Length: 268
Length: 331
Image (tube, each protein chain N blue to C red):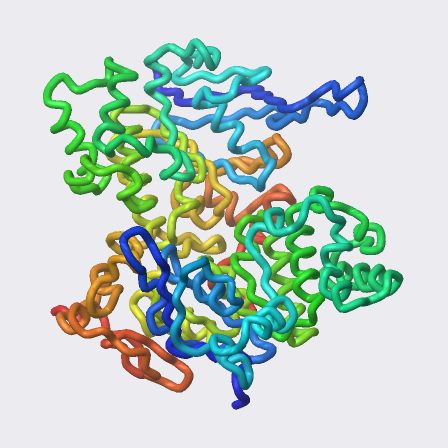
């Protein structure tokens, strides 16, 4: 084992494509990701930014194994991730995802405690040897939730609390890489900072790496070490976060930064 | 000062739920002046969308409304339902967040934007000219050709422009826009916000902009109304409110917006989540999350008072020159 982290080379994914009815009106396949190279070193937070249709979410889904690429290689610490269907359990466990809408990504019929415990049923190797209830309480405490939350269903929790439960569930498997797809975008702004703090603490305490997919450049500037800018399935620029924000080199990056709004400097 | 175009006074709205009526708007007062954009900002449960729905008269069935909605010289809560329908769409128009859901997929855009003049009996040739003119006013290139397109042939930003054209068709004095750019990419958002500003400047249409996004407000709003748990906590000129908030909630919101053009640390977050109007805390609804809260805040509901000219706040502790430091309040 080494600590190369995530390596993505030559990733290609295309969607759609049909022959059409009676051979007419068919559409060619659309390349959602057209040859992407990307690295996330151990302990690093890499943000992928871009507008809708840029392919940023598709890259994230390939990394967690929800989408099968047409071509390219994905590896973690130089171990190939394998095809979507036959990922070794250890790799599946090592890469966890936090979704945009915490409410719809949690099972509404299960309590928060059961949601966290379910992760261990899927991956017994990660289950704690001792008292599981105590381990659940510790995980909930780590993400800033009171032990009483364990007995409540997602419908009885706020959006921010649901997102904390999602993070606790991911942490239950002691992952190496957390893939966050717009993980704070659906939250109220006063709650967004809580979750950003939590993600930043989790990275520090566990030495996790993160692939942070976001359209919010302000959030990215606060949390990312490095930024990858995507457009129409391709990487147009990648750089350390401060360099990208202060000295963007690609015209598209400059256009994105120019269009982004800030509170300061607004015309009255 | 001239009379406001719309004056919302002590508006209460109760919504029926399985566990009884919920007081979703509690004594809300604010006004919208002609040719100005008023921003209504808040998080989930703040009641901002409910306030817009009450104004346009599209509250869910079973909603009970109290208070007054002065539209120039008439109270919209007291007029006949016939008069209410007349106002809706013509004098007050609305733009929704998701234009794809609000446009009819089976009708051309040109036909939809001219719905109102068609009902007024405008002739076919003039309708075609009107449709072209409307699409042109909202910045759709090649408008004469595009009137024959269906909504799916428009991009997301163009659909939002088409919605705006539809709203303009009745020559409204006030446009209510509910999160008009939330579903759009940043580069498209910037252009739609420019369009809204342009309409205010050239057509002198007043606008009530409902959004959760302070950055959008900073760019478009002249006046700001900040809502929390169904109540107004602060209102005043937008730039002044954002630069020197007179309510701790506004201050926390401003602090939590990450900057793009400067490096900022992750803000000290407020504890907890936005209050739910169904379980509104006693006293000031914000007190459980407030860094300044003292005993009085827990027991006495603050009224919205004017602490400096044009600056209204519902904070017990606010003064003419600002808010106290936490250390002064709780040494």
